[in-house]
Image (cartoon, helix red, strand yellow):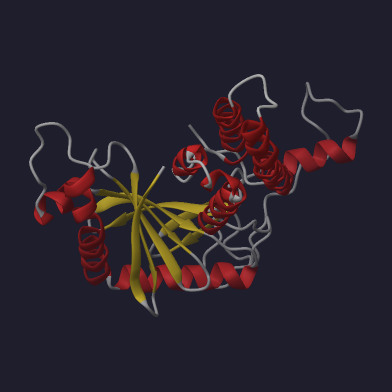
Amino acid sequence: MDKPALKRSRIILAFAIAALADILQVPITVGEATGVFLIPGELADFLLDCVVMVATTMLLGFHWMLLPTLFVEVIPGLDLLPTWTASVAYVVWRRKKTQPHPISPVIDVRKAEVVSTPSAARLTPPPPPSSPPPGTDDSDEELNRHALQLQKPVTFSDSILGTFTLDRRVDWFEAHTVWSGSPIDLHLSAKETGEVQAALRMAHSLWKDQPIWNERVRDHAVQKLLPLKNEHWLGEDETEVTPEQFKETMTLESVSVFPDGSFEFWHNDGDLFWGHSIRVSGSLRDGVQDAGIEG
């Protein structure tokens, strides 16, 4: 299931619900001690935590951090800590880190070829028609023109990585390219013209040294996640996984690059972690730094 867009209104509402739940833990605990409530305090506490978890999941999308928070709230004494507020803050931080920044629909990439107008230096959608097509609402001509313009594709072509198309649903440029002989998706997460150029140069650097980066990424995933797999994620009657088996099972699906020089490699786990994605991240300057499972 796709996670909802991380909007300001959703974040504020999620924090408000979490803070209210943490505040209500105090009177519930006091009521349980004094016998004020008609129902057991533990039950009231648990029902409140269930409601908060469902609400935050609907607002921010499911994250594994919500599960331990739910169970921690059941432990007497610990439920007085602001665990829901801390959990929401962590989930928002993780979502913001992985969610690309908004980018402008008009991009100037000087070193890239423009598919629609090869001689132009600016990447702009084709001009909208002078009037809405038949069947559209012509009550607001300016609004219709703007809507039609947003439907036009924004693309640019790179001689190494292929044709990039702006995906307005997630506000990034996406290209279908090849890494180590296998097809993958490449995402450029950028906000302005200069950032798009920086992200593109970043991708070129990765692709220039594919064998080196490919080995580093896979080795780091094995180093960080193989112990986790063998200690906590083995199925019934499943034998321990070797490093070679781990590498053979994980499959690269997409690479996201950012203008600050950081990157994320996203893999299909091949059911190593029961359907979770394997994320390996780092930067050109510092190398591969982290690996984890997401989703």
